[in-house]
Structures are given as structure tokens and as C-alpha cells.
Length: 451
Image (cartoon, rainbow, N blue to C red; front, top):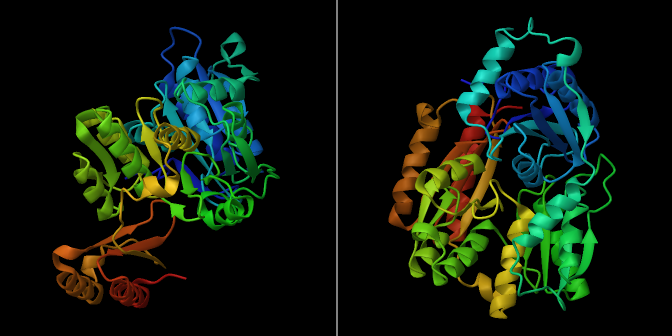
């Protein structure tokens, strides 16, 4: 069992274990030890989002990595997928992202990329933990000329902007389009507006004034109502909302209606199927995706493969099966033909390209998928016990499953980053599944609840 790493790196309240400077330094030392082989000078890229705590964590990581004889390339605020890209393109040995993604500013996190731009497998994360807790690396201390150096890469934003634009068809542009863009006061506050403007769009940019404490605060992909109002106010063609580290995206159409990750996958999958570019005719999604996605992709001649929740599991399945499109309902979209991880701005460009090529507004494109009613309720729990070992909860869940039959489903799982149990119901009758979800949530809170 992992002691530090969750489903997406190490995460928690900044300056509280495990997100302390002491642990960041140890993680830096462990990473440097794993990624060096002694035959040459090694380099690790470090980037971050706009959180106030990013400064102290970055400096601790740099100190740890340099203390093990590895050089550091600091790129400053840059989207998570941008750091994955820079790591690979600069032939660095690894990449580190300091971000807590969509969490509030007081949280922070550390996640690692291998030199190919893909997230580390579980085995490597466990090896890092073993090195830290066994104290095996405490006595390994290079001296003199063998310690590492830290360099700043000043043109990282420009490099990434050029890469993103290269994923948009060269025979198309965005001239005449009016786009509302919400960067969540996060890592994409420079990159995303520059990309869209350079392609010719008129951009109404919000969430582009980070203060260190306003990341994700009432803005970004968790608050699509913000761009919805702005799209209607400015009579824009669509709205694009990124999260704090810009690895996910949510859209609203020209009428202000939300278009989530499932709809994005359906739009992109059916378009790729028509072009015969969807590898093996398959989309990879998680168990949280709506059954409407399965229906839409099947209608287009393809199929959907499901994984556990988490973009890393989506990517693992894509690589294992040789697929090129996958994602999550939350807006994490992976286009392996272009990048190695979820990329909100890149995803936006793929949707915009389809809009330009077909001449259809986003509202028309989104009609390719009709979602089944879905309800999600979160309950704070005291511990992560198997719910089926709690008789009252197990009995109620089995009863609801029997009533849903083949016309719906129930999915209950624990959050990978918070002490929450997520209860999701899907079915034909929104009122009925809402009632059942609340009944299960109340029973969980009564028997398993935490303060």
C-alpha cells in the first residue's frame, strides 16, 4: 500500500504533512536517485501552477534534486500537460508538477512524469516511498562538482504555445470566432489566451489575474456558470473553462449550456470514426461516464472501454490497447496522437477544429449524445471500509440495484484525494434515482459518517 502517493501524485494541505518542505525535499532526493544512472549529467524539469505555496515547495524540490547530483530546469507557471511536453521535447530525465489541480489554493501537490512525458507507474512511486521511509538515501550525498545546478527556462511558455498551435489544422483558423475563456487564475493564464488569439479568435479572457490565492476560486471548470453568463452577455460562439493546472476543460455552447467530458468524447470519437482515425474504433472512458456515451459511440460504429476512475488508468489502458482517444466526464481528455496526458487547451483546439470544418455550432455537435439522467452525491466518511461489510448499507444498495435492473446502474467509490464516498446513480427517471441516491447517502452518513 502507498503511504504518500494517491491516484494523482502526493497531495494535501500545503505545509501540513505530507505536503511539507521536508517531504518535498525527500521526494526530490528520491526522484533524483531513481532517474540517474551515473553515466552522464541528468536533468529534471520542474513546473507549477499559481498557488502561493508553490514557491516553498519548488525550492525544497530543487534543493533535494540538486543534493543528489541532478540538475533542475525550472519553467515556472505552466500547465501540467505543458510540463509533460517540455520534459519529453527537451530530453530531460523526468518532469515534476507542483499543483493540486482543481483543489482550492491552500492545497498543493507533487506529481512526476517519466522522460517520455507519461506519469509514473505505481511501481516507481512505491520505490520512491521505500527509499524515503527506509532512509536508504540519507547517506548518499554527492560533493564538490558532483552536486546539481538549477537553471531557468525562460521560453517554456513560447515553446508550448507553438506546440499547441501545431495540433490545429494548418488549413483552418479561428478568424471571426468570439470565445469566452476562463483560465481559473491558474497555470494557463498566459498560454491559453495566446494560442486562441494567435489563431485569430476574439478572446474574452477571465480568470487570468492570479494572485496566489484565487486559483479555482469561483472560476474555472468547476464553475461553468461563470462562462455561461459571459457567453450570453457577449453573444459569444462558445465558452471554454480550464481548471487550475489546465489538464481538464469544460465547455458551454452558444446558448450557455454546459458540454461536459462525455459529450466532448462523443463529439471527437464520432468525428474520428468518420475520418477512420479512431484507432481500433475504440474510446477509453471511466466507469463514471454516462451510458449515453456508449450509445453515441456505438451508433457511430465504435465502442467504449471502461477503466477505474483516474486519468492515469485511462492512459494506461490506451497504451495497453493501442488506442488514441480517452477521457473522463470531468473534462480530462487524452489525445495520444498529440500529447501524453490530459490537456485542456489542446482539447479545446480539437473541438474548435471540428466546429470550423463542419460549420456547425457546438450545440449541434453536442446533440450526438443524449445522456441518461445521472446523480452524484458525496458523503464524508470516517474511514474507507468496504461498504458491503456494513449490513444496512449493503442491504439498501442491493435493493436499489434490483429496482434499477438493466435500465440503470449504481456506482459507489471512494475519492482518491479526500475522505469522501461518491455515490452515483444512473437511470431513466431523474426524480427516482435522486431519491434513491439520497437514501443511500443518509444511510452511509448514519453508519459510516465522519465529521
